Image (cartoon, rainbow, N blue to C red; front, side, top):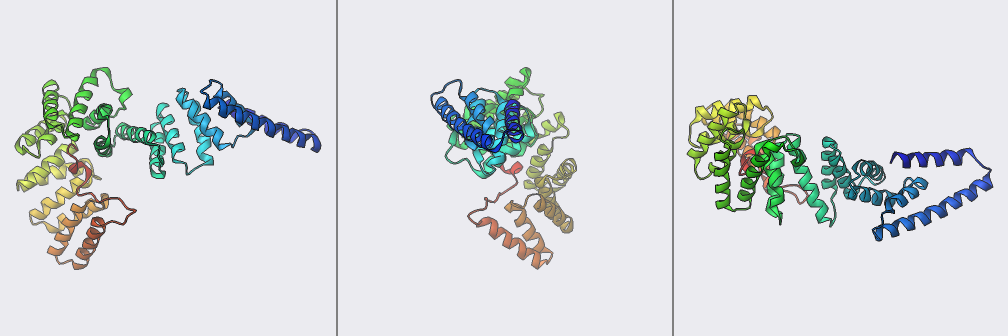
Length: 388
């Protein structure tokens, strides 16, 4: 695409330097005629799946660099031929002309993914999601898949798992999501193509367990989690996954697994969050406070850690400290209903009527959102999702 830009620049320079007015007018008319012929030839070649389509589009774009249709089709064809760097450069020119074109940002992000420009790819794919992709269901599926993969690669595991849970529930072939789900569940910062050879079986088995659970194939999930634990008893992340799976129906077994995870992974924040929540339900307030304080220290921005610490403080009668933590949780995650309910009760208990009234209004807004706003979270993602 550098060559295309050079040809376009050369043409502009030649026209600006040269001939008298009449000759210039004649040259311009000839160029228009040439462009029209080239654009028709390029469209025909694309429709006939001919190999010369890209070359014809590039020749036409040399004459008219700001031709949106030519940039779009050229970028698409380059992507299909796996010429990702050229596709990326062409699509950057396209979105500069068509900034509201969701599919353009989508294909640009996919090209940047293939050239390993991961932060840019994530930004552009998320922009495509925000703008919308129309009826392009296959493209939308690819965008969601790669966004989830990039969130894991950039160590935003909770966000990745939340997205994967939604995709798995709607996907007709969830087997394709096994590796992304395994990576997110084990909190390994790779995209599927980067998985080390000696980690691939581990990731696959973890992903199969997660996908089976999310598709409600509970016998398969149980067998996969047990096989995972037996095959990789000392691997970071394995006992957390198994413990989170066990917690709803077998809390004592889940607590045992989460404790084992902390022996293997002493800085595992989510294991502490899940344990703190379990101890809070069992009224073991001192342990809930200790673990949630450790979680807050390790990750000062995690809303669920502040929420559980606030709830534990309130349960122990330390209302001012509890309110402070709950306010931190609300600031970090204003969409979680549970935090607002916690604050409503705490404010009421200490006689802060105006603050309690405000929380009640926020609860009403989240419970009955406007049509253009997103749904409220009943808990923060890390504690609400079956695994995270």
